[in-house]
Amino acid sequence: MALPDVAALARTNPSTTAFIESRKTEAAGKGRSFTLRWTWVPLAHMSPHLLRAVLVAEDAAFYRHKGFDWDGLKDALTRNWEKGQLRRGGSTITQQLAKNLYLSPDKNLFRKGHEAMLARELERTLPKKRILELYLNVAEWGHGVFGAEAAARHHFGKSAADLSPEEAALLAAMLPSPRRYDPLRLTPYLSKRQAQILKLMKAGEGG
Image 1: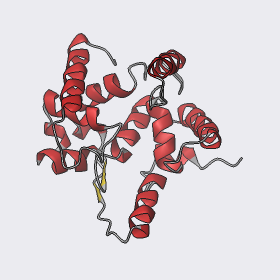
Image 2: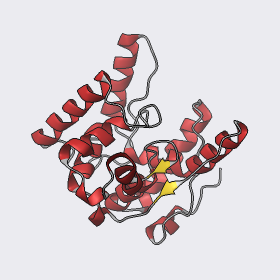
Image 3: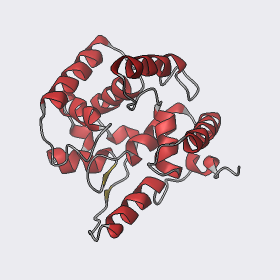
Image 4: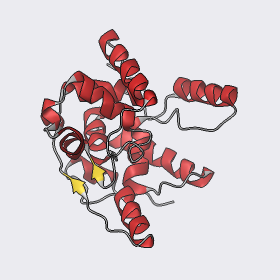
């Protein structure tokens, strides 16, 4: 299976992603318009609160693993088994980046296998900070909203550099279901998840 030129990501930012194109196709199929809100910014122009919030919420072992967090995956599978349902969990930021950049939102074993190969290639080729920068710039945060800068402006009317800990934790809490909470609605689940993330941020996890 041929892999994309991951090395090019060390020097250039992607002009689009598979996820963005999939959302465009989805909207067209439903006869809806699609307005893309996407502004690329470097990590230095993002609030450190957002970096910490996303790390503790999505992948606390990010700087310690090589693309796969086997302990996190085992814990997620255990939780899914105990609850009797299959839900998101265990995917690292690198795996999510691979999915967003190159794959469809569909869930199947073939796609997961391709995702694993891409994640390994991303980790082999790019520094961790570049992987995190790419992820935070391509993650979906609402209907047509991609990346931290667009998310901060869409949901809070400010730059990603100016996000408070509470705002950063709320954005991180949205990530598993970003379109469900757009426009931003403080549901009991979202408030509880925000509080959990803030607690983990203060405890110093995700570093």
